Image 1 (tube, rainbow, N blue to C red):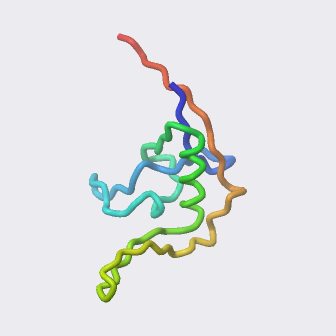
Image 2 (cartoon, rainbow, N blue to C red; image 1 turned 120 degrees about the vertical axis):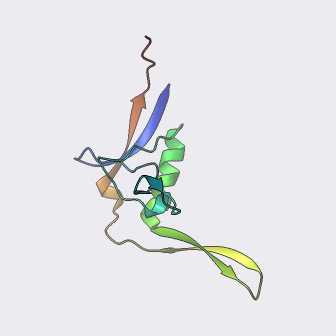
Amino acid sequence: MTVYAIREKGTDKYLPNGIFSKGRLRPKGFSHTESSNTLFIRLFPTEKSARNSLVMWLQGKWKGNYNSIKDEIYLDFDSVPERKRENMEIVKFRLVEIKK
């Protein structure tokens, strides 16, 4: 099985699956994560899905906002200028079952 991950170039830091605090997943999405070498790696089933996630992550930290006057929810993001495409890469892994 082939999967993909997003890595910070020249390091062993990958974008993680989620944000954990005191052993629990915090209620913030993937866009709020930063590359890490201690958290579980977020894996993608296709290169395209990894690329799409990287594009969204590079845009910044996404958040949903509610407009009570229009009764609408809209998405917005806070830019993170330190995030640069040239610092990131998509890497390919082959998962192999280890039989007992």
